[in-house]
Image (cartoon, rainbow, N blue to C red; front, side, top):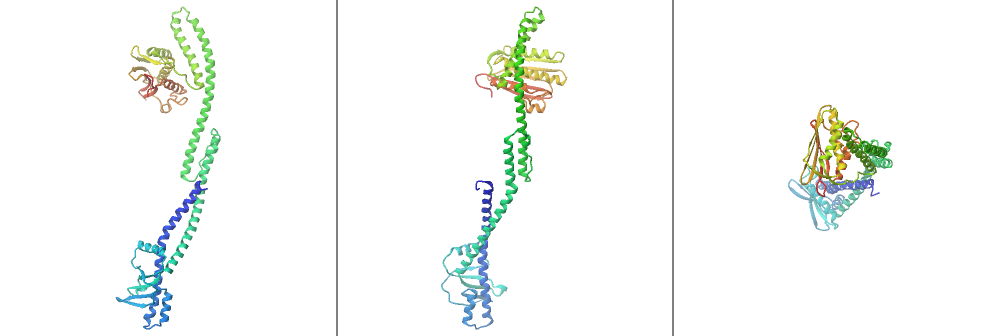
Length: 462
């Protein structure tokens, strides 16, 4: 029980209420002592009135008056004259004098606890003001034992009452906190455990119902989290199914393309000049398509294959990319500008680098075509001591905000209607396989710039 929130709450509440009661007890015990002394002063004053009414009083009556007042002597000061009104033999000398007329609260508290701690019986002198202004002051002597016993009895009763109040208050507070806090928290925990059994089931998503503002906010945050997680799990399941379907399609498509590759061997033997000129490009395109199918099958298994790094001419790879795109833009006013140092060599997997650049140039071409106006695609490259940097720039309309938010996420970063977002996701993965990075430089109404950075040396570019 003491390890639970409810048990600790009960204990802490009891402790704090007891502390509050102790803070009340300290001044109350001092107040009780002052009232006890004042009561004796009032009794003594009443007893002294008998003597003032008659000049002579029987000694037996005087002793009875002192016993009733529970004092030894009574001194009354009237008209600047101090007068011993009643007296009797004192068992011992006076050990302390207390003037309660102008004593401060801290002094009264100090004297009260000194009185409680002093176990030796004795006689004390108490000075106070007479009631009804019947003189300047009244002074009595009295025993400390009766005062101390009365204080102890009062203190025990106060502490017992405080303990009872503490327990009742703690129990009531515990019941209140259990109803308004602990039960809602347990309900939230129960919802979480129930949801964890089948997170794909949308019926298990928590419905906020708490009346406490903070717990309701926690329930609403949990509902959003569970909703997003359920959607992500469903999407993951759909992607897994799609991946299996793509793998099957890629497998069959690879077989078809392999057959087409055999037919192109016969086409290359043709004497037609146009066929001779186009046949190598057709062979190259089919070879790349077969390689893409094989890579898709590898991607479906887990990841892209590791690049086979060789030193290749960058201008040749870009020329192949541009030639393929020029065939796709016939009848559309799109210009291509390649600014690459002559003979620039890079260390990369030629097929994977072709796929990366083909994706970027194709995206740029599609953005310009979608804008319905003429455009220009520029490919530049530079080399320094650290890395090779390739930039693909276009003057299209720029990427929409949603595409920028999930730019390199498969099936979420599509920039055009109907796009899957796979191109940039695959391109980024291929570049990372080279130890480099693919970044969006700038995008806006004036165009978009993508940057491919490939490191030199054995380390990765960071």
